[in-house]
Length: 452
Ligand code: ADP
Image 1 (cartoon, rainbow, N blue to C red):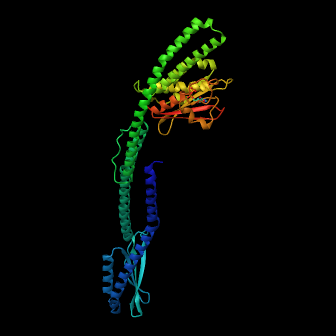
Image 2 (image 1 turned 60 degrees about the vertical axis):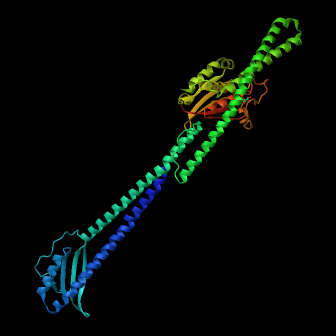
């Protein structure tokens, strides 16, 4: 789940809880209290009217009483009916025959009674039927306004929170993650968000310091690697020249004097020829290794399937001889293009497929599957799987080191440079390489590369 919904959902939950409390609990109570308050107030009003009627009742001034009660009804339209009874229960008001008010039966009515007292003696009883509708409508209006104000405040709060989270957290974090991904591709120039004076700002500053440290370490490493590689390149290049001379003279001796040599002599000569060939192969492999990263070609975009096809063409004879079966899965074929140095990646595929064909028990036909997918960081991941002799877990790191072999040459040919070259190629492209395997259970070599 993304950060924004993670932060906003609890806020919305709190909002709905408050609304639930407001409408489910607080509002009915407020209505009830307001109704009671209105009835109590009307009751006090009726009480004062009842007291005002006392002298009129004592003086039997019925006309004045009628006028007063008529006026009372007129000035208080929500008092729908007023009844006045004397102490014997006879109705004094409204006058018999006067039509009583007509009102909607659905109207909420409260009947309020007050005795008309002089001392402890009761002179009569005043009853008012009061329409609560206007008071309820007024309360509703107030509650509605309150609700609107509350909802608007919440909305403003929510929008401000979203804006704040977006600008203060999400945008800098997104930019930082973009810069981290770029850093994984050795791109040190991606602009960083401005460091604010808060935790996110501290994170940005730490990242910037880390990137700078890595940049200078890489520059230092690149400088010393460059020197080493130049040395290795020059040394291996120069070594080939005298070796070629040794090779041609050994061939010459073989051609001219082989007949004059005895059996041992011919055998020694054969060893010398083989030694020259091996040495030549070793120097060639070393040259290849030292060439990786020394950019001779431009970066380009291409499909890894084309590279695998080309590697298989070069290996066609070995594949045929060993009756190997090579399968390129749909996942591999549908991989997006990568960006990089085609010759280097060709060497990578060639070495991995070549090893998968080579490291097999003598009686087994190689079965090789080349699979691929895009991982969650957007890297293209390729797997070269075989059904060969497998590798013990303890050697997983060792086999990627130069000249490190697990088998004598009499068992499996090789110089111990292939996987070291693969590692160098993958790392030169900003990816990584690893192996999963078990002895005699086959091996799977994985490498990841950034997409083009
Ligand atoms: P080499 O030229 O000897 O093949 P590599 O660097 O390619 O050199 O391989 C190093 C070692 O890793 C090999 O000697 C071998 O023991 C082991 N290895 C490489 N690929 C495989 C594989 N597919 N299955 C089993 N072992 C392998």
